[in-house]
Structures are given as structure tokens and as C-alpha cells.
Length: 136
Image (tube, rainbow, N blue to C red; front, side, top):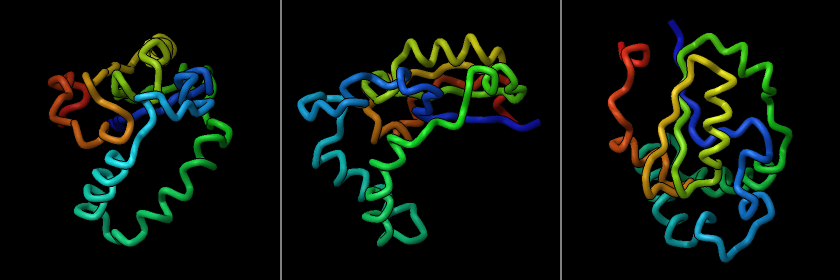
């Protein structure tokens, strides 16, 4: 059986905090220079082409404003167990993850404490023990 893990994945623009949608550069939700340095270092360790990090960053603004690919009906149609991972200080609103869970009955949220957007994937040790449907 297939499984999905969606990390910081909103399905509507309203799923993202307003200070991220309309960048408020004073917001602690937005990454700073230290965040980018840490992310670049993590990328350099794990990526097959670490020199492509700058190109990856260059795609982020366009991706952030591109149309989102899912609808509420798409979420209702998910049959695979789905883990919804967000950081409590990240881009996606906790209430939005709860809405996705209501729409997709086989989904489970995982809100990582004190976790901003750029560190989400490096804090998997904070994930709770996974339900049986995600293991194996």
C-alpha cells in the first residue's frame, strides 16, 4: 500500500500565514541568513549536486506564487495513509493542517514544536511514533 508524507504542503493560499504570503521581512516565520547557511550546509551533505543549491533557491519565489495543484475534492479522494508534517513556527497554519485532515480521513497531522520552515526536514527526530499504517 502506498503512503504519503506531505511536508509544509498547503492546498490553498490561505493555508499559509499572511506574513509569509505577503512577505513581512520582520516576521520570525521567514528565514534569515543563518537559516539559509544551515540549509545550504545540510544540502551540501546530502545532495548529489551540492553546487545546484543556488539554482534551487532561485526557483523558490516563483514556486511560492505558482497555482497550487490540489483541491478539496482531491484531498477527499486520497486513499493512501497521509502524514501531514508542519512546523509550529513554519509557513503553513496549524488550522490548515487540521482542515486537510478533516478533508482526507486517512491523514494524520504531525506538528513539530519550535520548528520553522527551513528546518522542518532536519527535525524528523521530533516526529511522534508513526501509526501502524505508516510503518513497514
